[in-house]
Amino acid sequence: MIDFRSDTVTKPSAAMKEAMFAAEVGDDVFGEDPSIIALERYAAELFGKEAALFCSSGTQTNQIAINVHVQPGGEVICHEESHIYKYEGGGIAKNSGASVRLLKGDRGRIDAQSIEQWINPPLDVHFPLTQLVSLEDTANRGGGAVYDFKNILAIKALCQKLGLPLHLDGARVCNALAVNQVNPAEYGAAFDSISICLSKGLGAPVGSVLVGTREFIQKARRVRKVMGGGMRQAGIIAAGGLYALTHNRERLVDDHRHAKQLEETFLKQNWVDSVLGVETNIVVVQLKNAAKRDEILAQFMSFGILAMAFGPGMLRFVTHLDISAEDIDFTCEKIGEVVVSD
Image 1 (cartoon, one colour):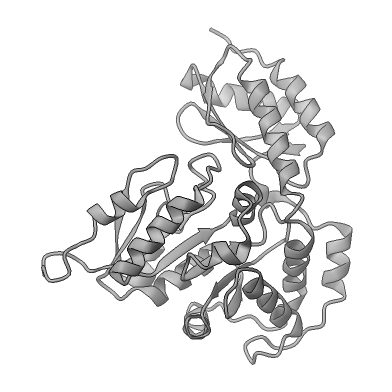
Image 2: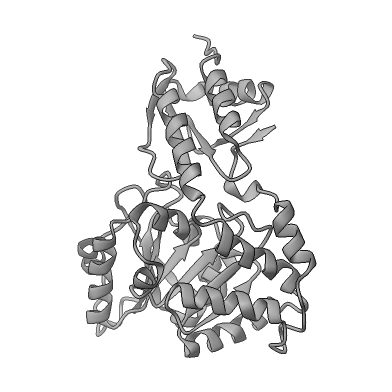
């Protein structure tokens, strides 16, 4: 099967598995796993931060960051389609006792003007205190949309003026950097904390890294322990993450090119209403007849192609390192063979 359901379905390459097999390990809760230390140091330096923390998932790094930044009863500002709100099991409320201010925006992106409009008055006891702004780059529900870095800087300036921390859910931040060509350290300077997922387009089997100041990461390490996230000889998986960061960032442009090829093919089909403009590796297709979504997915499955439903009348295809140029050519051919009944 050619699996476009997500870039989380990638499997480690032979070279990555070799690096993992050879990893030197120790007890990470004691701070003694050399492979984890190497990954954390590399990630922190790459994004211009003082320290980093290796965790099992992007949800964990996001939830830890939120827990450090906010107090119970506080409020987090984010886009209404943000992963931290929609797909993390109600973690903001459950883990941190905070409420959420959901903003509308452009394909998962919000701007400084809309954020400023919804900052709660700090002296009015009727409102929760605004305590954190969180962005997602690229924006999953926005079809992999990338922030204009100038807009991020404007949001950062607002947060600095108001004394608010700015967090990034960087599940696909390396995809964003492959597009905007901003230096990772310059990009990282705009945020107080960044969650960097290693198991999506970068191809590691598991794990995410949270980066920030040394003081922030020390607090985050305590929260990780409370959440049951302390790992022991986890250098075996950290080595895969380090391999991913050092070997698989530059090749993300191949995934973006493949996604554009799919977009161009879908736009030629009479059963397709529109495609969200492809910027990275996510292709979101809006069907003319929403009721035909599952029928079309079944046809793709019969061709040996897996995709996923992404809402009423919507399909999502995500390109990644386990999908070759030949797979893309085959898929484009089969897109043209889809038959949609009246």
